[in-house]
Image 1 (cartoon, rainbow, N blue to C red):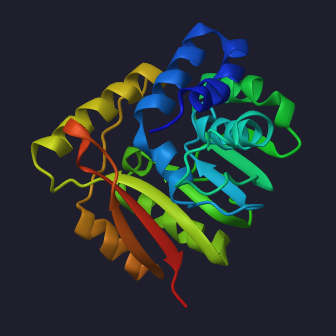
Image 2: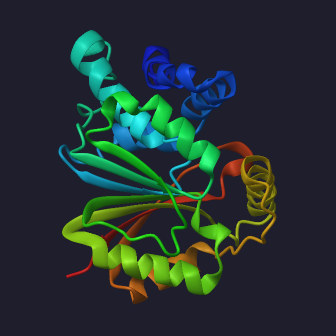
Length: 240
């Protein structure tokens, strides 16, 4: 179980960005299993350079920074005993298309500006720095199929030889659960950005085939619960 104090520590900086930003951060970190999974399974190494595509209001950065500080200063004894110690990233660079979210990310993480940065840009065109970890959580289905392939091609080129891509997607072949995911994601798109572009979804097999063709070797982990059991975390590493 994720410690409540950890969620509170990671979401607290969003108070400076307003009540909505703070409540959203708290709810997302509490209920989305992706964040706990990253820490529980040690998916991000210490001193990693992280590229966060579709970074939103910077929740991944807040989660990692908050977890490291909480573990170091207050609660190493309360840290889940089966979790490794949280990493301290060398840098985190977030890219998001929504100006409001980028503003909130900068406000919440301003104390860490030396290592955490956010830009308002389109991941289809924004430059990708050399990196050790690329995170793309619930974002690629907002662009078309050609753009998905191009983004992943550029991710592959930017990754260190021992780097990793953490790609969360919904399995389009998962029946009604996939339909629920599409409806939720469309609603989120409208609520957060006002955009109403269509979604481009692939089955798990199609994602794996695309990644394989781009030079990744990939493992799959279920990454959802209840109606969101269509979610998959694809852990992709450069092959060879």
